[in-house]
Amino acid sequence: MNCKICNTSVTAIEDERNKWEFFHCKKCEFIFKNPNNYVSSDKELAQYNNHNNTKESRGYVAMFEKFMSATFEPHAQSIKNVLEFGSGPGPVLCELLKDKGFEVDIYDKYFSPTKVYEGKKYDLITSTEVLEHIEHPKETFAFFAKHLDENGLLAIMTQFHTNDAEDFKKWWYKNDPTHICFFRPKSFKVLAKMSGFEVVRDDGVKSILLKRVD
Image (tube, rainbow, N blue to C red; front, side):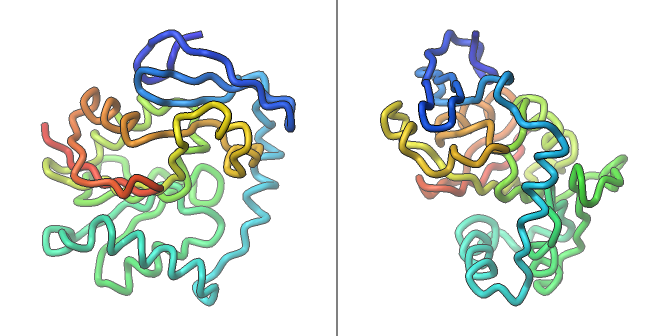
């Protein structure tokens, strides 16, 4: 088994609690689940339907406010239109973006499956708590590059692991059965170089901002 990002050989991590296997790339620090341990699409959708946050959920809104201020808000003057990629059953971030005056399209595999992005480019793509569910990160980054204008921004939120296998075994974030990919800032730097992006900033914990440069 080789890394899905950099094609380097990987080492196995056995998750005794859940009886799952993961693979760890020491070069780009990416961790991904063995496909044999994926849940079905029906179970995946059922898990997502358990998410019932709304704009009235103060903690949920505060999380997005912090994400926005930490990533793209300093560049807001250059942003007109946004694609919210992986909006989920309750597109709270979409509502917050519209409140700030942005034009927003939403796409979600299950909840907003119309491919509204076709033939369009955006100043900003947001993807919050999504990439941990995506099987093929390189292909997803190629999609982002295709649908961003030059110098367009990509703002991502996903929990970063510590790059330690023993820590990973104890980590709460990997216990969600729909979470299959886990990143470090270095993982995104490698993806960025492959896909025509550069990293603008990351918080070392769960958010990163990238810019399309070619």
